[in-house]
Length: 405
Image 1 (tube, rainbow, N blue to C red):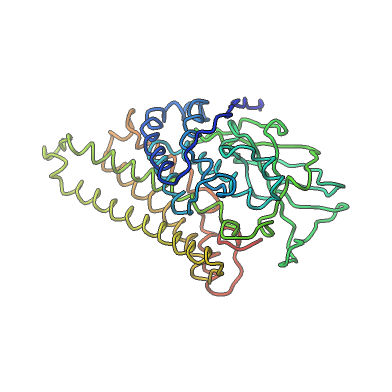
Image 2: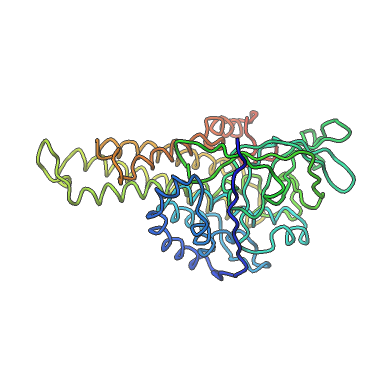
């Protein structure tokens, strides 16, 4: 397949939003603009350059940088609200924002000078995949890396690329050098997009605009300082739990659910049932579907934000999470994605044939959610892993429930 064309984005300007309130306000203001561009984004299968610039201007990519860098002071719940606000406009744009803002989180795992070298701007966008699909052979000063990764969301417009690798020395796999030990040495590398071969493979039913392309590298030297381990952060703290990069994910699903409900409620204002001739606002069937969906979205939102706030209160005090609090956010995440997919499916049904005709966005909402729900961190193994933590068993996906691999 042909190599993908990468959008060249310059961002010398400091866009300036420095508070949680201002970033959220800018995200809400951007949402209608994203909604107006949603079909174009989907057809392009990546974010247009001016849409990337719009996202940068909201401040979303600086949300996780520490105050010592000039970043805003934002909790995971506050960051999730911003992603949710963007997702009301477009799921692919919000998904890319959610992935791209990890730059600030990754900076916590690296030495200060290396982090500032790799993330020179608060609005630096990162893309890539964390599963250790690459092989990093240890050499003097760093690693020789070879590998192929899928699902590089946002790689068509990013400034930095991350990729998960297993470390080898003299052809043999290393174990984790940290205090846990006994496990494979999983390490993340950070590079520039031009160092990778990017292949246009992203032909999907949903999240089409996220540009989640494949990327590969062969025998690339990566300095030790441009790598990090989720299990062994340089500066441990509440932002460096293994699942820190997963906390804002539910915001995408919640925003799409809100957009779908708003669309149906606006439709109901002027629609008449063709069989009963009753206005939709008087139709029992429609009333039940809308209220049920609102009820489920409300419960899912409270679960997500409640668990995020509870976890943060504990972590910010320097305490460790007990089993119940450890898995709570993971379970709320899975529940949010599945709940929103189900309720949007019912809204799609209540709209009947209207839902399949453009410009109705319902079909895109449903396809986007179906694709989101295939992500590894919202699959059944997360429920199994949560149950294993609660019962003292072995989780299949320890990382996604906040445990080092």
